[in-house]
Amino acid sequence: MEKIGTMVTLSKDREEKFAGLIDTYEKLVFSICYKITGDYFAAEDLSQETFLSVFQKYDTFDGVNEKAWICRIATNKSIDYMRSSGRRSTPTEDVFFETLPDEKKNPEKKMIEQEIKERFRELCKGLKPPYDEIAEDYYIKELSVAEIAKKRGVGTKTIQTRVYRARNMLRSLYGKEESG
Amino acid sequence: MKYPSDQELENWILELEQEELYAPRHLKEEILKKATQPAELRQMAGTAEDVKKMQLAECSGRSPEHPQSSFFAYTLKIVAGMAAAILLTFVLPANNGMDISRAKERMERMEVMADKRQEQLIEAYTLPDEEENGSRRRSNFLSHIEAEAAQLFEKADEVKELNIFWNKNQGGN
Image 1 (cartoon, chains in turn cyan, purple):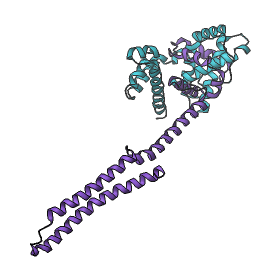
Image 2 (image 1 turned 30 degrees about the vertical axis):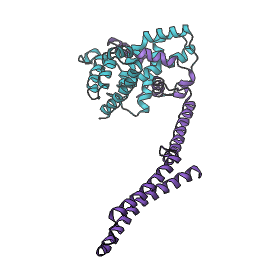
Image 3 (image 1 turned 180 degrees about the horizontal axis):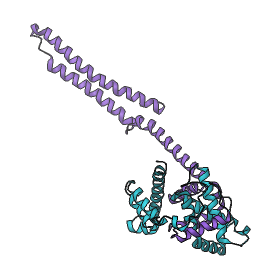
Image 4 (image 1 turned 45 degrees about the vertical axis):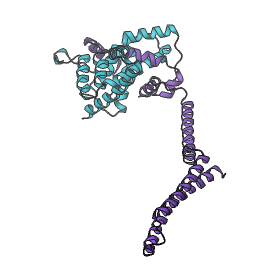
C-alpha cells in the first residue's frame, strides 16, 4: 500500500465537507474495494487511503464528476494492491469489469454485508476468549468501542487494545483462508 | 488485472449500486481520526497499518511523538536499578544486619564460653590422685575434653575470620 504524504491541516469547514463526502460515498468506496480484492481488511485499509487521497487532492479536482473521480481513485488503488500483492482476482482478470447481461447474473449472489458477516462468524470461532466476543461485538454486531466498554464494564483503552489484537488475529486467519 | 476504461467503470458502478452497498460502521471514525492526525505522525507512519500501531501506542499511554525521550527515561530507570542492586550486593553481606562492634562482642562471648566449657569438662572428668590405675583413663578423658574444646575454639575462629572480613570491607578498624 502506498504511503500517504504530508497533509494540510484541516480547517473546520474542510473537516465538515470531508465528513460529508465520507457519509455520501463510504459504502460505495468500500464495496468497490471489497469487490475487487475480496478481502475485508484490505478493503478497509484501501477505503481509508482512498478518502485520505481525496482529502489531499481535493483542491486539484476539477469538480466535473465527483462520484466518478472518487470511484476511480478507489478502483485504481484496489487494482494496484492486487498487482503488488501478486494475487489473482476471480474469476478472470481482464474481464472483471465487464458487465454481464441480466440473464447470466447469479440470482443467489449474496449481498456484501451478509457475505462479510457470515465469514466473520466463522473466523471468530477460531479466536480465544475474550477476543472472540470482542470481535463479534465489533465486526458483526458493529458496536462502537465505547458501547463495548460499557457492556463489559472495562475501560475504552482496554477495549481498543483488544480490538486491535482481535483484528490482527482475524487478519491472519483471513489470510490463511485465502491462501488455503 | 487491467485498469477499466471510464465507460467500463461507470457501467460496473451502476451494476454494483444495484446491490445493497455496505461499509463498516467504524470506518468513518477511523478515516476522520487519520485525516486529522498531525502531518508528521502520518509521514512517520507511512502505511495504514503503521498508523494503527501508533494509535495503539497512544492507547497504552506511551508517547509516539517523542520516542527518544521515553527510551532515555527507560534507560535511566534500568541503570538506577542496576546500581542499587550492585550496592546492596556489597553492603548487605558486610553488615549482615548488625554493627561491627556487636559482632566483636559476640566473638568474645563465644571465646569465654569455650574457655568455661573446657574448665567444666576438666573438672568433671578429672579423677582423684589415689586412683593410680585410672591414670590412663584420665588421660583419655582429658583428650576427649581437649577435642570438645578444640571444636568450640574452631567456631570462635570462624567468628574471628568473619570479623576480619568485615573489617576489610569497612577499610579496617
